[in-house]
Length: 557
Image (cartoon, rainbow, N blue to C red; front, side, top):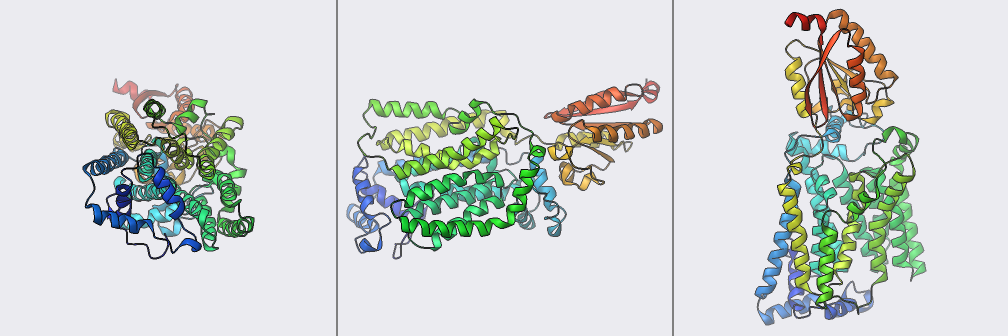
């Protein structure tokens, strides 16, 4: 923290100071002595900076007592294993083929650095494609290589969350909060997703860490940095700015006791935020004016909100831990709650998720999709840490952590669905290529991007962001682009194609995902007098239809 702090020697996921701290307070299971000590020494102001630092007493105790007890070593090993297992869940689907949105990221960079900006579109995150492009120059463009930047960003995000939790809780509670973050289903998915979400939560966690450090800071540079980092969140995902009200509330609460410092630092933070946010305002305006074109999901039920706040079996395990702690009288009901700490955790965890849910339920703009809910996961993890911190038995905390990791790992390693990472066009396009390449039969492809319903079809769909799967999984045969929905453009383009194909007695294929099934049915009905249609293949919801001219079908019979 301050100057003169001894060097930190990294030991796995823990540091040397933490080891010393745990050893010193190993005989203080309820944590009262530690909280008292931290209350007088943690983040000291200039008036008491000359007082002895905790690290010094930790080192003295280490020399006096010798080494850590077997119980402490076992505890460290258990948490280390739990953390490794939780991180291993990220890599189950690391070799999975790219799903639709991941091919969208690749299509933005495949034409080279100079074409990144023109190929982004109004909604895309302006920062991530350049990071991905640079990574491909170093790592290549394989599915695993494309996912490495997201993995590294999510690892850094987890570390920053640990640092934030460490400002509030004992080391073991901070580790538990970090593990709960790592095993959250949205984090597991986003950690290997070739999309900007890992970098978004990394930037967000950096802003949260700066916000917490601002509690005992009166400088000008820290609020300036906070404003810049928070604005940078929008460079990766604009919708994550729904967390801004939570930051404002927490900022005011942190400084409410010192109005002069509050207004000075708040003004600096807002000014830096505004200046940094300026370049993404056009994207925000585009989002506001075309919000209906990007909606594809349904209004969420209340159960989805509950699954985000307490995913899987977490609520049952948490209830069991609290019940066992109460039965053994290990619930801390005497220590007063830190109101600022509670407000910050609750605001960061609940305000953004409730905004997303309320907008999705009460408006036609349904944005309560899993990857957007990632904005609230750091705050949710801190809220869980807040609850666990009231259990003053280190053994019960450890058992809770082991139970969460064990159950989650069992579910993921035994579920066949864990090997998939969103639906992919890879196998459908491979089947189409294999079938159509024999006679160069054209393929009608319905884009699955909702934006295709309002934008003109590209002249070269194989090199278009609108048909991004074709930029990574290639087709050598001719491609006829169609919108996602059965609208006037789809009817016009398909009708013209059918007229030309009938004159040539040409065989062709058609591919569409669930949202384009009406278009596929329309093609079957419209061509029924001249073509025999059959389902060639189905892959993860993608249906491939083969249309054979009736005269050719009769000749073959």
